[in-house]
Each structure stands twice: as C-alpha cells, then as structure tokens.
Length: 357
Ligand SMILES: *Cc1c(COP(=O)(O)O)cnc(C)c1O
Image (cartoon, rainbow, N blue to C red; front, side, top):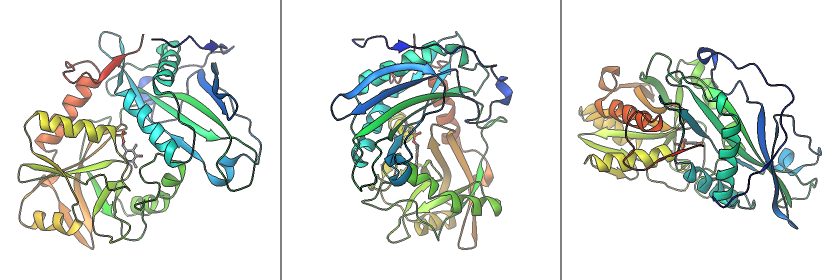
C-alpha cells in the first residue's frame, strides 16, 4: 500500500460494547470515525481518524437544502480463526464514485479511501462481532458542506466513515417473506437518480414501505416508473426469479441500483452452469409463469440480508405463492456459499474477500 497512515486522535472514553445478541441494525456506533474534507483549492485533504462525534455544519450547508449527498454500505466479517474480512470493497468504492458523478460531486481516490477505511476498521477491530450472522457494518458517506443557497453544486464536501456492529438479519436463519407489488408510488425513473446511493431515493420510499407494513407485507416490489409494468427492485434489494431452471433478473435499466451482491450472484450462477439472463421482466409475465407452474424461486439480494427468499407476493388482489413458501435450493445454496465466502468458512475461488490487518 502506498498510502500513508492517517492522523489519529483517540477517543478519551471507550464505549461499552453491546452483547452480540442485542445488536439489531444500525443502533450502535464504534468509538472512532474517519473524516476527510474537500475544497476546490485543495481537493480531498486532511484525512484523519477522530473520536466518534457530532458534525457541526452551517445551517445554509447545501446538504440540508438540496440533498447533495451519497453513501455506501458494506460489511466486515469475523472469520472463525479471528481474521477480519471485507467482501469486494473495491466495488463499493467504485460505485461511490459513480454516485458522486451523478450528484455532481468530486470523486475520491478509490484505493486511498479503501486503505483509510481499513485503517479505521483495524483501529476498531474489537468491535467486529463474532456470533454467527453478525458483522461490522461500514457506512461511508459524503455531504455537501458549502454554506450557499444558490442552486449549484457545492464547492466544499466532507467524507465520513462510521462503523456499526450489526446483528444477524435473520436470527432464526433465512426464511421467505411476503411482499406487495407497489402500484401507487415510484422509486426511481430512467434518467433520475435511481442508480446512485443518494439520500432522496430512500426517504421517497418510506410511505410505500409503511403502508405495506401496515398490510402485513415486509417489502414492496417496485415497478418501472414509465409503464408500471416491468419489475425493478424489492425494497432496497435486487430481485431474481427462477423459472424452469433459468434465473432471470431485471437488466440495469438506468433506474436500478447496481448491487454488488447482484453482480456476485450472477457470476456465481454462471460459474455453477445455471443459465442467468439480465433482461426486462414484467409482473404480468411472472404471474403467467406462476399460473403455469413454472415459477420455482424468487429471492432478493443485498449486503444487509445477503439472500432473502420471497414466499409470496400480492399483485392486484392475486396472491402468488412461491415454492409453498419454502426456501428454494438455489436460494439456499447461494446464501450458504456467499456467507461462507464472506466469513472465510469456505474457500474464495473468486478472490472476493480481502483481509483487514
Ligand atoms: C444498496 C442497494 C442495493 C443492494 O446493493 P448491494 O451492493 O448488493 O448491497 C439494491 N438496491 C438498492 C436501492 C440499494 O440501495
């Protein structure tokens, strides 16, 4: 690594670490964070690790008014022999830069920021939990900090990385969930910001998500914004359908977030000799497959839950049950293999993991 060791200001008091079985998601944060500032004059400068602390900003900062911000999400896993592993973190750095480009924000040096991130995790290594299914969630984000109400890209930014120990997404192991096809709201539209991990895409889904939850569904299935016909994503996950032995996932249409789990699942299925296609797939088509008994499995992919099987979905009053609400063989094998690679339990033929040391 050519990168230098960043300046570290140690926290005066260390926090109590929560028990592994009480972690939940995104509730606890470690003792330190990483910070770096950008200005037109200096570019990205002054990388440092500081105590985990509030950020003070001018009330006119662009982030508060025009939402100029991007984020990433990845995990560090503790292996049985005590090593700390990251899963394809270079892809997260790459995607953060793609998000930056969409939001008119300055790109980062991917290798350098990845190295800083590893230095932060190394300092906080005692926070990487050990229990089955737990991990240290890593949340890098960039905010526009210039105090200026004019409608233009900010000239100042702050990149911050915070760390949160998180529990098992499915404490009882993976199980299929019920979802609802969303017909009223739209998540993203071609030409919009759906391909970027940026704040506005997520608060725009809260209404639909809470309505679905009230009706007893755990997620919504998003259709395309223009024809309300083609399947895009489920909640904040990518989605796959197994039909007659073939796996189909919506193609990256310009309004779908390009998931790293999605990419890995496609590479893995191809490696196993299972046919995969990335193409447009309509909800009507999926319903027809179900009617003909050809719909074998439906599952979602994302860093949070890795593989999340769908047991049933509701579309225009039709309840579509999949595989008698049982986990399908391919879903289970993908889950076992991916989590096995991520935690170092299985060998890593694709060289997807990197050790933090
Ligand atoms: C982050 C995210 C995903 C999943 O991406 P991963 O890289 O697999 O975690 C899918 N959809 C949306 C909208 C997301 O924000």
